[in-house]
Figure (cartoon, rainbow, N blue to C red):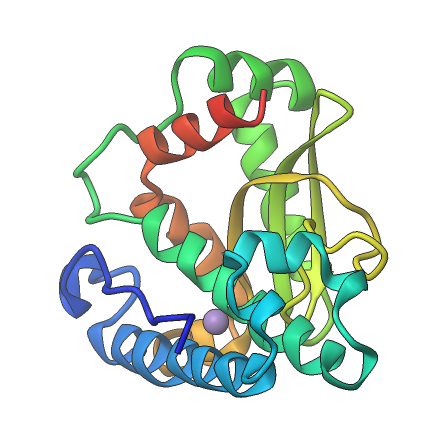
Length: 209
Ligand code: MN
């Protein structure tokens, strides 16, 4: 099996009270786990796809045979997106509450202030009807905020509405918040900032600029 469910870099309850342990357990073990299983099933017997990294697979989604492209798009996207998501979070108070350095400067330049950035990011997540992700990314050397439906991600050239280098993404599927927040996506998105691990996002930004 070429693709594996990564271990969480912390315990299920590490993001309490922002994200409850039961949600993390189901989200990681069941939702992400199922994407990995389905992705492995989709690429089974196709060595050229089996040897790719998940990032390469997303970037080359147009080259995936049409009969499995939908499965790879949904489950490969799910695997990439969640693998990113777990790493950009950490316990509340464990790292700085705001970005610093070049990322902080770029956010200020693109969005006016850190608070304006947060507001625009949350708004984009609220406007995403149904299931999807909201992203901060780099496109033509500029920071942008946008969202994708389902498990699409901005690496999927020819499939995604727009492509760019993802810096951070927030899962706005109901499965990410329903147990604790029910229908209150705004409460979840606004609370989420408390568990964002800025040093990791600064490192991801440095890699794509
Ligand atoms: Mn999810």
